[in-house]
Structures are given as structure tokens and as C-alpha cells.
Amino acid sequence: MPEHPLDAANLRPRVQAIVDQFLGEQTSILLAVGTDVEPLLDSVTSLLSGGKRLRPAFCYWGWRGAASSDQLTDSAFDNAVMQAAGSLEFLQACALIHDDVMDGSDTRRGQPAAHRQFASMHRGNQWAGGSDRFGEGAAILLGDLCLSWADELLLTSKLPQESLSQAKAVYNEMRTELMAGQYLDLLEQARGGGSIERALRVVRYKSAKYTIERPLHIGAAIAQAPQSVFEAYSGYGLPLGEAFQLRDDILGVFGDPEITGKPAGDDLREGKRTVLIAIATERANETQLKELREKLGDEHLNLDGVSTLREVIQSTGALDYTENLIGELLEQSIESLNSADLEKGAKEVLTNLAYAATKRKV
Image (cartoon, rainbow, N blue to C red; front, side, top):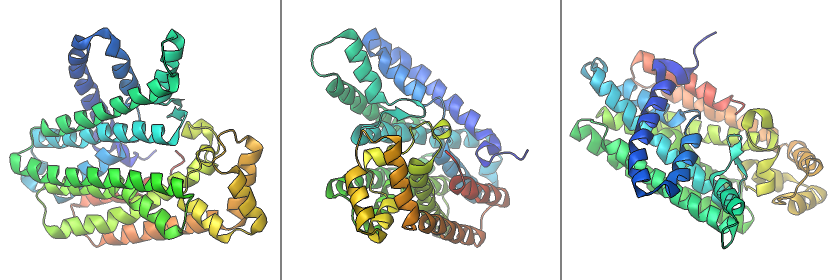
């Protein structure tokens, strides 16, 4: 069986080792505050014990694609890049924890979301005040802690100062784009959704740039690559990032709960105003629109209701349209990558990553 592209260069075990070592170092600091904060450590350790590791992968292979021969043969440099890439897992943890609070999600990777964990702890101990409010507050603080740790892990990566300085500049811009994209997502939910164009803007800034383009740019910055490499990575990363999120939107409606770790149709209960929903709304007839308005965002939506909305999405052609769009974006991405002047091995892994990111089931 061929190696999964996320396992090339032993990436996933190496990232896990970096995460585990860093959390081990933070344990003594946290426990010095008192054992009461141990649930914070337990929650983030559980969250970071798995995951696709996409962002570290694009960062690392972004560096490998543009690195000099001296960098590529320097094992210490390679390890420093891997740590810098691993820092993105803590930024992702921050984004996931906060996103689950904003969306009111119950689960994450098959386990209770962080805010649900803390709310349950509050209820179990019969503490004063509201359990949900306590859970949300604790989760927000945990997300902030992960954001701080992401910075710390990057800045202690032992990269040469010039590489680190250039990478940090990209990293700072990426965080700003991510937070702005999260706000745009909140805004779309509050407005009740809108045009396909607006939904795609959320996709670009909340997911596409942060998941693929900017991690690639961080890798290029570490390699101190020329502007042409950054442009090639944008041509590859932006359409691929959009295709990745569109696949995520489809899985949020049609995905198998046994594989995704989330209840069937969970995005429908949360009322997410995705591109898929924007297309369905634009194409729906009066009866279909009524179903969308009544059922989308109903947190008590049962499986029959999920089935009804799935039928609306399919019958309006929204599912086929989104699948075709994913294919077009993937084609754009691969075309840009093929024309880029990158190290051959890295280009091959990036090609395989593009297919893995868009054809996944989880």
C-alpha cells in the first residue's frame, strides 16, 4: 500500500513527538499554579493526540520545495523546521476550541468539545453559576493558552534569526486573516447567509489561506525563497485551500459519523451558511426554501429533518455544483504546482497532498 503523503518524511509521528514534548514541558509550569488547572492540560492533550497535521505538512514541504542544498542536508535545520511547523498545531487547536464555542458544537474528533467538557465538570461538581457559561469561559481561556503556546513553540525552534524573522512576519499576517475570517463567518450566520460570493470570501479567509497558502509561505520564508516561490505557492495553495473547505462543507452534511466523529448533519443543526447552502438557497423553489428556512439551524433537528435538507441540497444541484467546483479548483492548483520551480521530491508530495486533501472522507 503506498505511503500516505502526510506520512512522508515521518511527519505525523515527528509532529506528535514535538507536541508531546512541549506539553510535557508546560506541565510543571501549569501544575505549579495548582492541580486545579490540570483539566486544561488534559483537554488540550486529548485534542492534540490526533488530527491530520495538514498545516505542519504544508509548512514543512513548502520549506523542502524551496530549500537550499545546504539546508536540506542539515539535520538540525530540518528538526528546527519541523518544530516551527508543529507550532501550527497549537494555532489550529486555538481555532478549533474557539470555533466550537462560537458554533455551539457538541463534539470534536469524536469526543466532547472543550466547552462541553468543562460544562460537564461544572455540573458534576454542582458548582455555583451556570455550567454552560463556565464551560465557554474555560474553553476560551484554553484557546488563548494554545495561541500563546503556538508563538512560544515557533520562537524557540532554533531557526536562524533571518529565517525566523521572515517566517514570523507571515505567521502574524496569517493570524490576522484567520481571526478576520472567523468574524466574517459569524457575520454570515447573523445575516442568515447571502450570496455565493460572500460564502466563498469566508472560505478564503477562514480556511483556505490559513490551512494551506500561509503554511506554505511560512516554509518558503524559512527557506528565504524568492518572490516567485511565494507566488507559485499562492497559485497552488489558495484554490486547494478553497477546495479543501468545500469538501469539509460536504462532509458536514453528508459525512459518515463513524468516520467524521461528528453527528450526521451536524452543520445543518448549527445552521452553517456554507457555499453548499448558498447555492441551494439561490436555486431552491418556494417549497424547498420553506424547508431550508424552517429546518436549517434547528439544534433539535432529527434524522428525518437532516434527510429532508440533504434532499433539498441534492435536488437543487448544489451538491453536484460544489463537487464540480472542487474538481476545477484542484485542477487549477495542480496546474500552478506543475509550473513551479521546486525540488522534485517536495513537488511530488505536494501533488499527493492536493489529492488527499480534496478526496478525503474525514
